[in-house]
Length: 400
View 1 (cartoon, rainbow, N blue to C red):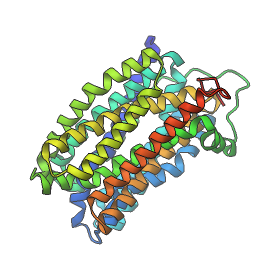
View 2 (view 1 turned 90 degrees about the vertical axis):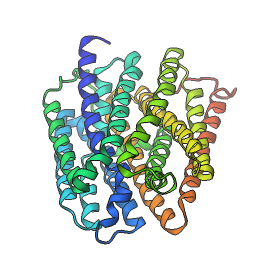
View 3 (view 1 turned 180 degrees about the horizontal axis):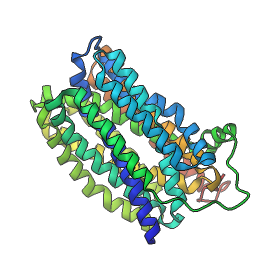
View 4 (view 1 turned 45 degrees about the vertical axis):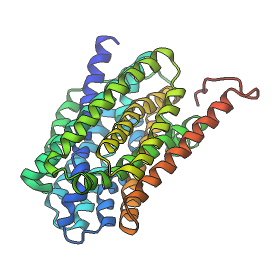
């Protein structure tokens, strides 16, 4: 990458990482800390964890569409302002209902599609996987930091104090947005599509649907897993809440050691499909292990490492693949659909996970995850067979 690309991607990755740091810090503590709020039940806690994903899902395509027409920076600033407001509402909440309102407001700052489209604007296609990997690495680092400091900060200042810190991260992100270099101007004659066309690009294009389904499944599993993992650490393994972060950090470091070589190899060989199938298989295996042997500390740690390895690989690879398939003029809209699928997965992960946890047990949450991972694995295998069939000899997926 040239100097402009490096500077732009580094800035965008930092904004992404700060914003995700704010969202990730509540994951390892919400299922435990929120029990003290008025009106707390497993379902309401699940809603509080995942409801930000619903407003994110509803607004990703509009934000991506408006960024195609009005510019990336204005939409980034608008989204961060909403995220800041939602963080303050959540910090002041004393009931689950108020906490859910704050989380929904946080989610209404739906800038993930704008950020990923911005990255597509400022990088050449041959470097896009690397750029997305940089973003993925930044998110991975923020994930690791969040899982360590989230429990610690909550122990010191409660869940309310954690949301005030998240509001401060939103303000820091605004400063970074104001310093972003502008993207190259588009070629004349390329107009952004209508809103109806934007939805069609994102959800009707056959070469994008499987990727959208994959990120939906991935974030459903992530959110649902974190409804259960803190309870396993505390109740089954006897790990104090303040020490949970060190368990997460150790497993994340192990997953990075496995994930980074896979990213590098798949980029050089330009054959990401086998790695997508392998990652889907790893998700399936991790969920089955956690459903059946989570009482064993060693086996449970191994299952978490397998899960994080697959998650981090897919988190970097799926948006990279989609950015290559989506045409330039409606990349923001396509990324909007992708991000909508991602956050809709988070919503259903929290909601369904909370319902299963309250109505059945923690094993039911993991069996749901294993079923979804298995279905996506089958869909990937069917796509691969279709791509090499005599009726469809082309391996590459044409742009829309």
